[in-house]
Length: 493
Ligand SMILES: *[C@@H]1O[C@H](CO)[C@@H](O)[C@H](O)[C@H]1NC(C)=O
Ligand SMILES: *[C@@H]1O[C@H](CO)[C@@H](O)[C@H](O)[C@H]1NC(C)=O
Image 1 (cartoon, rainbow, N blue to C red):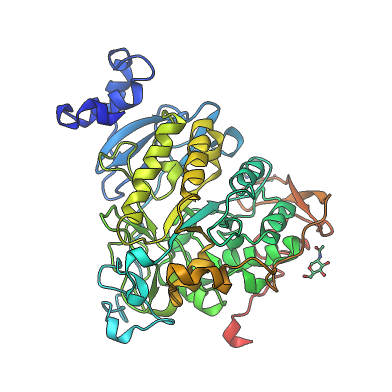
Image 2: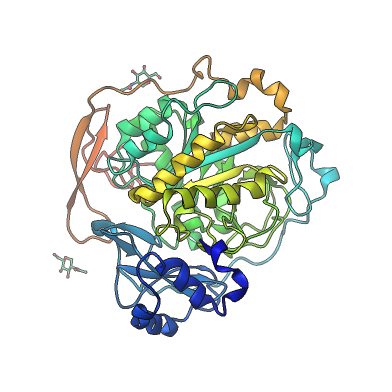
């Protein structure tokens, strides 16, 4: 659409936005009121780019891109949640604006990681490059696979399970004949553990995104991170039969990494990777790297680790955007403003974004989603078009994050991939959980969250027996005994 406009004729960003967004509706003049309101909104200083609540209504929000506010409406039926910063169902939306304070950096700057020294950083244990864009193993882009990492954040439940099944429809396959795979960063509340077991049993990767999705976790201490992440891993074991050794990745809620604390937890509790660090928009996408050395790009969130964590992998989130910034830019695809586009335009937008990887250094193309992408038909259909197209490319593999990391630690050329065991699907991996039961137990459980002053009911579905209470921080088994859990680091056992 924007291509038709002639970008040079656009006098200011508002007109641009106006034409792009409202062409479909009527024209810009009729929305003068919105224009005036929009002018009044100021993007907060220091906080940078992101989504911000409209003070007047929970149905709208502003996306700030380089200090300029773009007015957005939540899709029909959805409301803006000012904690998670996206549109969601009314009963889950916490209307804003909710005051936030910018926390001071409390840790003294000692012991800092130094700049990448490739001579001291050798695969398979260490990987870095000066600006993070170099292909591992010194291979040429035309000889390596283009990996696509589909990731899904948050609870898995009836709102989204059928949509996810359509993505992994058993028809889309990688060039080695295996079904395409993805990675799920699970948060606990409202999750259905029978469905999660189903995903895990089909070979998708399950990782943790905290029990409570509390905001402000980036400034909390070691115990909180252990409680949230390791506790989530325990819940997955209790109720989805997923063995602890299979849960090796974590993602910080709202992409706010927990400074050095979170990475200490990764080290201590046998995790292999984090995927929470955003990369500012850049021409060349950044490859995953280990944290032996300093992060090779600006830290968007302001809460990245500063120390060295040898061997811990970071799978960063490169920004998604197209050349004229139509739709803005975003780490999560659902945060870009594409919901006034038709499926074909969504498809073309994804294709252009993808080509920045595919035609350059073939860094893994991560496609991070929240559920709400799938509540808009045009976006979902556009995604299906993109997946069908990408699955026809002879060098494109949709893999889990752990599968991508196994390739990176031991890079293979395209003609070696048919026999690359970590990407094979002939026999089920040893620790893959068994298929779930057909009919799970639907447990209605008492739940008293710390910020609720009353007891509520939460539902939990699992193939295991119902627990006494809704599992929560400190009580992953749902025993009803608060603070029952005691997690011990691997290196202490
Ligand atoms: C959990 O997994 C084990 C083996 O991995 C299996 O023997 C057991 O039946 C499973 N339990 C349920 C409830 O799925
Ligand atoms: C919580 O409940 C107690 C007792 O029912 C009441 O005295 C108190 O005011 C309530 N607190 C809040 C924040 O609602």
